[in-house]
Length: 491
Image (cartoon, rainbow, N blue to C red; front, side, top):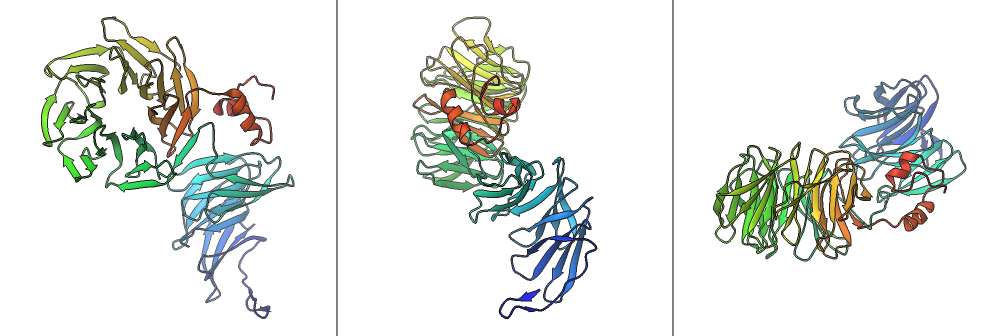
């Protein structure tokens, strides 16, 4: 240790049995972490000159070490191909991120403490969400070992250095084919809606609802439970929110109001006078908003009601249930409903065509079905998704459908499409979607914690041109598919 005012040696800290390649001061400068080839990390108390903790557990050399912003944790990278997160006060390992396939040479912690970044022997830079223990991004482009990595003070960019003789600057949230990226939730986006001015509202497992302004700012409302469903009133600035505990809340000009019931889904009538909630007791509750009273309770489903949609005229209400059926209720005669059967698993989403003659549904059976309500016996079945289909929506012109799935893709279907066109790919399952009023863009919410706005079709020439500015090596077939590029392309 050196006193930098006079450059006098003040202390020598000896304790490792191998080379010391990693040194990091704690944020308060009172402690120093040593990473060594003896497979351990020693934390020194600089006031006493004594070791405070010895962190053991790695199976090979340790050269990479970094402190969390609060000074309570350390992250280390090792030749054993793992990254470990440690509790400094106890010396215990909190998390192990394994399976890297090569040594980890450098680590860095984001300023907000949510993510760690590390550089690997295969040349990749990986970004991990420490709270959710999942990979946020894999940044590839270096042709040799990535030796070092650091984060910008705002946490939005990563700089890396490599044995290929280059340093590269990356964005932590790399952009894909989407027109707009809305990032801010600290967990999966579980619900999505548009308000009457077409602003996007998202709800998340982090217990927040976020209103995304066109200028990029976000208004955040915090709830005591994760958000399950959202619905924006078409007639007033009122947001209906269903939480994981089943409660329904109205947030608006009159303050917050709680309605009785245990809801899984919500839908406003087109005139904004009524709110329907699909409930865990297999019923549908319809409230008169002006009086906050229950106008009716619709019964007939044999399991939870997870999807609701009012017809454009407001006369009919469609419901989808875990009992695998779809029901269409005539609100003028609420005791009667028409049952549509055919899905082989939970019905997760519903959407009425603008002409009110067709109803689109989607299911955990991986299909989208289009029902002709004028009398046709069999629905049209759309296949192409490779996992549970979470949401479906008609375009404003009634000529196309959009759907999203746990397979991470967003698809648009034309009148005669058999498999639809993939217009977007998230990093995790896609939970919700809506068309923007222009009919040329689709907004989606995902378990990857983001909402994204996509064009309704893919311009491959434009996408390829963008990709060429970002990619510094050939892509694998899987990577080409993930970025919507032709697998058989030569360049």
